[in-house]
Picture 1 (cartoon, rainbow, N blue to C red):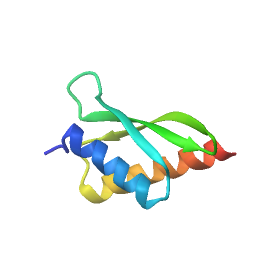
Picture 2 (picture 1 turned 120 degrees about the vertical axis):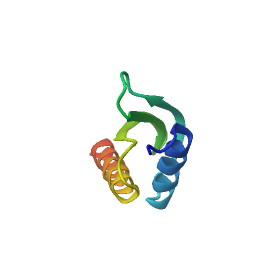
Picture 3 (picture 1 turned 30 degrees about the vertical axis):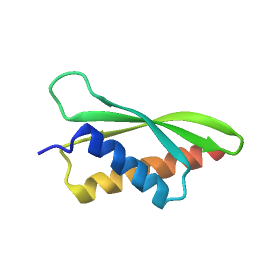
Length: 83
């Protein structure tokens, strides 16, 4: 069963916190159509600026895969944003 949108937002916030990324979940949006894709919109504090980014995931992935995917996307966003 896919993770609920509210739980997904909470999970992304938790993983960001674990990775020392200062971020606030702004919204969790379901994808269009019948699939389980969703995007979590975040405001990430980047020095003195705030960047709005999104993390897209398949909500029906297993718990471990979901955490790995979210962590990888957050890491990529932080590296790309600070480059």
